[in-house]
Image (cartoon, rainbow, N blue to C red):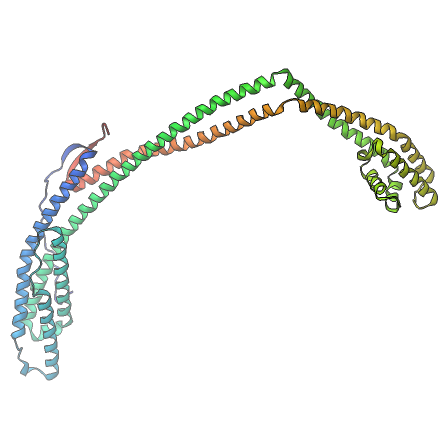
Amino acid sequence: MVFGWGKKKVEYDEPLENSSPSYQTITLDEIPKILDDIVILRKGTLAAEIKSHRNRIDPQREVILKIANELSEDELDPDKLDPHFQIMVNRGKKEVISAIKKEFGNTFPDINSTDDVMRFKKTSTAGINKVGDMLGKHSKVIHHFAPKYSKKLTNDLKELSNNLKDVDELIDNFTATENSVKIINELLSSREKTLEKLSKQNLRMDELKSTINEKKEKISKFKNEINEIKNSSGYKSYVDMKSQLSDFNYEEVKIRHDIDDEFTKISRPLGKFVHISSHDKELKDLTAKLSSTPYDVLNENNISGIKNILDSIVTGIDSGSVSVKDTSKSKDSIAEIKNLIPSLISTKEKFETKKHELLEKLENFDSKSIQIVENNLKHDESDVSDASSKLKLFEEENLDLVHSLPTILHQIETNLKDVTSTSYTISTDNQ
C-alpha cells in the first residue's frame, strides 16, 4: 500500500437493465440469440461505462504528473540539509519523479471496445502500483522534506486507485456474465449430447429386443425338434441301450472283481515268481500283468503262456526258489486256477461280445443330430440371457438420462434469469 493511503469505500450504483423480473416462454432455439444479444449489450455498456471512468481518471493522471513536474523544479532548500540527508532526498525525489513521468507521462488508452477496456485496466493498474511502490519506498523522505507534495500525491493517487476499483468491479460483473453464458452453452451442449445418447441407445435397445425375439423363436423351434427326436422310437431304443451299457459297466466291474479274487489265492507265489522268473521278456510282461490286472490278459491267445507261468511257479515251489508258507495248499490253488482259466476266459469273452454288439448298435444311432440341436439351444439361450442383461442396463441408464433432462432445463432457466433478470420458461414442444 502507498504510504498514508486510507480504505474509504467508494459507493457506485450500477444502472439496472430491468428494475423487476419479467416472465417469458421461449424455445431452446431462441436461447443462443438471447445470449448473443445480452453479451453484445453488456460489452457496449461495459465499454461506455469504463470510458466514462477513463475520462475522469485521465485528468487525475495529469494532475499527478503536474505535481511531479512541480516537485522536479523545487530545490527543497538543499542548503539547509545535512549532506547525508541531501543525497537521500535527491535520490528519493529523483526516483519518485522518474516513476510518475514514466507511468503517467502518456494519456491512458482510449476506450471504444472491450479489448480497449482490458488494455486500459492493465496500463492504469500497473502505473498506479509502480508509482505507489516508489512513493512507499521513499515515504519517510518525501513526508519529511516535501510534505506539501506528499499530501497532494497521496490524496490524488488514492482517489485514482479508488476509481480503478470501480473499474475492476464493472469488469468482474461482465466476467460473471461471460461465465454464466459459458455455463448455459455447456448445459445446452450437455442436453444435446444426452438426447443423442438416448437416441443411439434406443436404437440399440430396439436391436436387442429384435434379437431376443428372433432367438426366442429359434429356441422354441429347437425345443420342438428335441421333443420330436426324444419321442421317436429310435431315440427310445437309444436310451434303453444307454441304460443297458450302464448295466454292462457294472457287470464288467463284477467280473473283474471275481477274477481278481481267484488270482488273489496265488498272489504270494505269483508275486515272488515275477522277480525271479528267467523267462523271456514277453512271458515276464505277461507274468507282471497276471499279478496286477489278470482280467486284462485273460484270453485265448495267452492260455499257453499263462499255463507255462503257472507250471513254472509249481516247479519253483518244488525247488524252493519260490517260497510259500504252505506248499501243498499253494500248489492246489495253482492247479485250481489252471483248471478255471478256460471258464474265466469264456465268461469274459461272452461279456465283451455282448458289450461290443451293444456299442455297435449305439454307434448306428445318429446321436449327433440331437447333440447339435441341444448345443444350438444352449447357445441361443445364452445369447438371450446376455442380450436381456444388456437391455436391462440400457433401460436403467436411459431412465437416468431421461430424468436428467428436466434438471438440465431448470439449470438453464436459473442461469438465464441470473444473466438477463428475466424469468424464462423453456418450452420443449416439438423439439
